[in-house]
Length: 213
Image 1: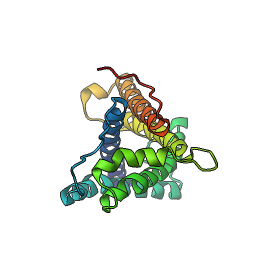
Image 2: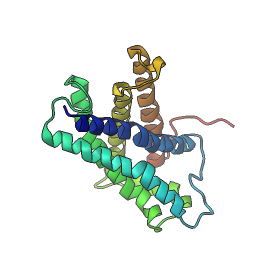
Image 3: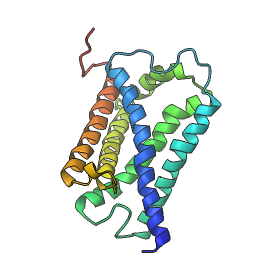
């Protein structure tokens, strides 16, 4: 393995943790507001997204995610046995297989829910209405969009959680395998439960988490 490829794989791992983590945590916060009974998920007074928000999103989230996806596809195409994920354990194979589903999910999610706001077709205050409209729609009586979102959420939860576990952390308290395991499981479950419960509520109107107050 060359020094250049090592740097590429380190960048690949980092871009899978930081921007994907930011993307997921922002959505977990959004879905958490759904579960808490919030009706307004965006800024109802905003007429359009700020160019600064779009630029920061491009540099800090979209760009790194595109690199991560592109480099991951390169590794898959090369059939590299020892990829940036490390060994060839079963979970590593599942991680690589899930990457294609994660890619399809993020692209679909961006085109379906984010692009309308970036392009100016919709505004921030339309976020909940847009989510409800798309997730509650059916094709031949089947909730295909909501079903794909749930499948994608499960893939993202595993992909991010296992990525957290496999990442080469420098923090001493994360060098122990047991602590990394608990952190990875916690991250995965937080994403899976919060996002999937919110999608079901938005798609069906049925609350799975009671609200108080």
